[in-house]
Image 1 (cartoon, rainbow, N blue to C red):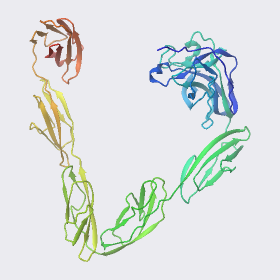
Image 2: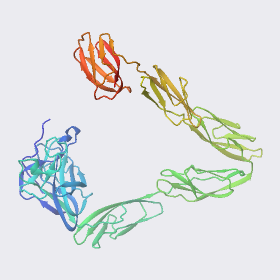
Image 3: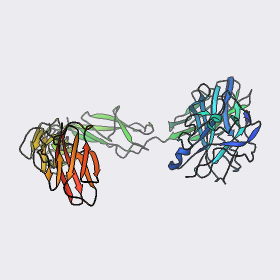
Image 4: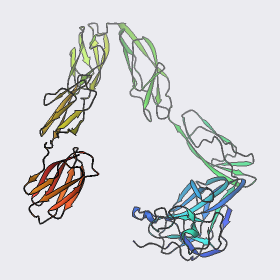
Amino acid sequence: MKKLVLFISLFSFFAADAQVLLYDQTDSVTTGGILCREHTTATSAQFNTEGADDFTIPSGQVWRIDSVRAQGFYNATPDTNTPTVVTIYSDDNGEPDAVVETRRVQDGDYNDDGDLEPFFEDDPIFLEAGTYWLSVKIDTSTFPWYWARINALETVNPMHWYNPGGGYAVCTSWQPLFTCISSITDSSANFQLYGCINPPQLTGFIEDTAICEGNSVTINLNPNTSNVSYQWSSGETGNSVTVDSTMEYTITVTNTTTNCASLFRSSILVNENPELADVENDTVCEGDLGFFDASGSACTGLCQYVWDGDTAITPFYNTSQGGWHTIQVVDASTGCFSQLDSAWLEAEVATPPTMSPDSGFYICDGDTGVISVVNAYDTYQWSIGSDSNAIIVLNAGDYYVTVTTALGCEAFDSVSVEVKALPTTTISTSITGSFNTKLKAGEGFESYLWSNGDDDSETTVSSDGQYSVTVTDSFGCEGVTTIFVTVIPSGIEEANNDGLKVFPNPTDAFLNVQWTESSQSARQLELVDATGRIVLTQTALSNTEQLDLSNIPSGFYLLNVRSESGMESVQILRH
């Protein structure tokens, strides 16, 4: 890839327009510049470059910076609408330190003349007294931009520059510019800062808030100085406004002494109150639960229901207490309340049904359970549609039953069913010293049963095949996990098969591999440990090869020899 030059001759510059010139470092501009660019393509990131020069805000002042002007130029035709990145760094003993503020302005060079003039009035930078470093660069991989330099050599806080990716092989960390590029004898960048001094600032300002229909909110402005004027987008000029409708405000607060202004925005949203559905009165047998339904209520988000002062997420309410019961809906997304309403419960004499089981129970996934009414009634009506005295369930949930006596008195009850997931486990494998395979299931189960008959959490197998383990959890639910095992053949010998000889075996360090027959292609050697991991590979180009095992831990290994005629395996013992 062709590298761009880091500095180049300056062509021209053009003046910027902003509120007040806060800082001016544009005297004696040279004909040279320094490359400052952030690449947008990852493959060019090593050529990212950035320069920074310092400025100082006097004691007792606060600057509101809304635009920057940095003279510069291109050595290629620029694209329009190229982003400009402005970064303010803190100072650490004469060099840039931590990022204080960053602004990314689309089309920072609006007339494409090389002078970057990013304007960020809507999001100004506020800085207190102290020394800072300004960095300006473009964000593109299409063409380079060069920040124009000033013809002066500064030894105190000179302009710094760096190429963090090292693509130019100079200054991968912040360094004075003239130490990065020996042909550069000046040490300052030209730039101007615009804005105003000591702008008003607010404490406790409500930027965005929401209220409920029928309520209001007061926006109070508390500036840090008394010499201010206010101009609201709604026409008011005081320091507070009371709002009871949806509206967006823009407030300009001006320091009447310095004529420095700050712009603030506040958005007020009035949320509609939720609508409560009509809740019908109910009649039940005495002692049974009455049922109220507010599910037709309308909310912007999730409806919450306040029944007799208690909040719930369900629109249904059960109570055995006769009389009036209150209901109010709350919109969980806004916190707004509906009007308060009430419903009447008439209690008649009735015997509630006896359920079996009489409380929630669980079943294992795939099994079934039975819920029944023990005592006799004339009719039964379950929430799932059945009209018998018992139902078979296989799904989790709340199952309701309505029973009716001969007198027509209804009673209600319910049972919750929980479906327990079948237990699952993993099977880990390890190789024993004799090259058998140990299978181990996860801990924490009530019992284990392997397909080979073992009933412990682990078993050892010596032959290839598929093995499974059935685990039983504390709920009595069973789950099966299966694994296929390939057992490494056991036995260690000094191999001499089909022209292959491996010695000494066992070995302390070096292992010799010899062939009595020549091969027209290279042989590949792989040393595999007991876990199946390849720990050493080597290519044999002749009929004799030596492997250095001195850096390999002691233990059993498998040497795989691959050639044009296939693969041979020999077990190795490293002392």
